[in-house]
Length: 185
Image 1: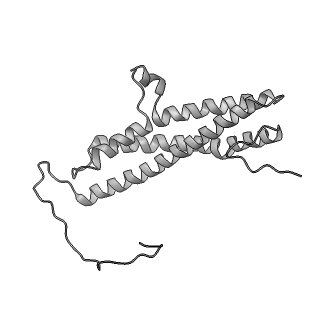
Image 2 (image 1 turned 180 degrees about the vertical axis):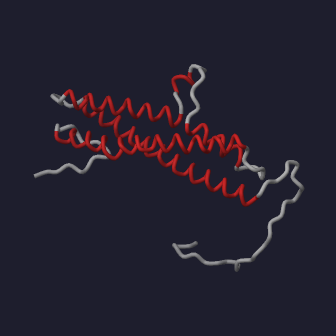
């Protein structure tokens, strides 16, 4: 590709890929394995996207909280709402990626959504073996937990955080990222 123009250098050639050596572990049904890989890849895509959206919302909320703290005569209810949203986001973060305070102290932690997903990807994507019952069960658990987790994130990101941003704007809090461009008469 040069200057946005793609030039085909060699015409497509069909070929058949075959293993170089015989596998030591019996190969499962390749089509079924591919389906599981595609399902887990789709789950990984949405989980990672939601985790990134959560990180962006956490950053916006942290900046907004600092701005609220630094604004004189801001209503106490505004700061209370910001603290409550921060606590809810922390709960979501723990469910998504674990409790960092526990892991720093070498204490056992509940298995998070991302931990389970990592075990699925790490244990199945680099092998021709069929996913084990444990991998399949992990997939079910991640899918179920994530399905319950995602609406909570959506509520915060799509409703609660924008509501807090509008209230901050009305209270004269300095502009922060994620908020609409301020109006001027």
